[in-house]
Image 1 (cartoon, rainbow, N blue to C red):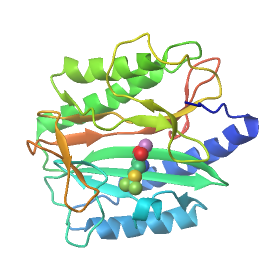
Image 2: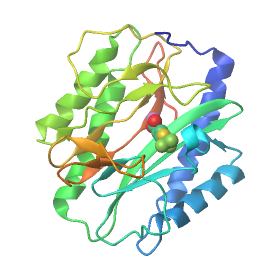
Image 3: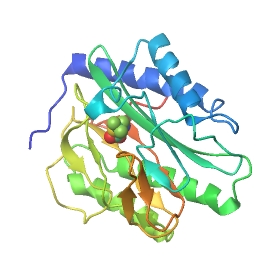
Image 4: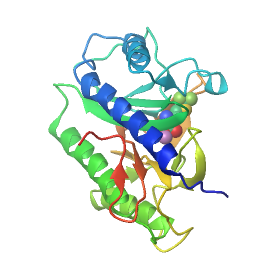
Length: 251
Ligand code: MF3
Ligand code: CO
C-alpha cells in the first residue's frame, strides 16, 4: 500500500477541482426535481462539468458511460442514469460526481430528499451528513486511519441505522481511487498514521434497515437487499498539520 503525499502544486490543483465541483453541487440542488429523469439530470451535470473546465472521471471508467451516478431510494450508489428513471416527489436521490481539473480529482456526493419525503428521512440524512463530519474531524496528522472509520460507524449505529460494509472511501489524487481504502466501520487505533498532504474521499453509506446490499443485473447499481432507504454523502479532504481541509465545500 502506498499513500501519496501531495506537494503544494498538487494540493492547489485539488483545491481548485474541489471548489469547482462544490460549485456544481451548489447549483445542482435546484436541479434535482420531480418529473426529471436521471438521464436528464446527468446531462445537466455533464454540461456543467464542461462549463467549469472539469473532466469526468467516471465516463469511460470500466465501461461506465456517464458523468454521474444517480441512485434513488433503495439504490445506494452507482445508479446508472436512465431515461426510464423519473424522480418522484417522495424520492431520496443520491448524486455522486468525480471529476478532475488539470489532472487532479475531486469526488463528491450528496443525498437529496424531495418535498414529500417523510420526517424520519430528514433525520436519516442529517445523520449521514453528521457521520461524514465526524469522520473528517478525525483526519488529523498523527492520527490512525481507522479513527475515521470508527467515528463514522459510531454515529450511524448510535441512531440505529445500518452501516454498509461492502464499499468504502479511498485515497484520491491524480486517480479517482488511490490507497488507502477507508472503511466506514472499525476500531480506532489501527492502520497507517495520517500525515499532512494526504488526500482522502470519505463516503459513509448507510441504510434505514439492514446493511446487506447487492449489485443489480445492470452490473452497476448497488441496492439494499431489504429494499430499505439508503444514503450516501462524500467529500474530498486534505490532511494538514492543523484541522482537515474539506476541498469540496465552499468557504
Ligand atoms: N465516485 C464514485 C466513488 O466515490 C465512483 C463511482 S464509479 C462509477 O468512488 F464508475 F460507477 F462511476
Ligand atoms: Co469516492
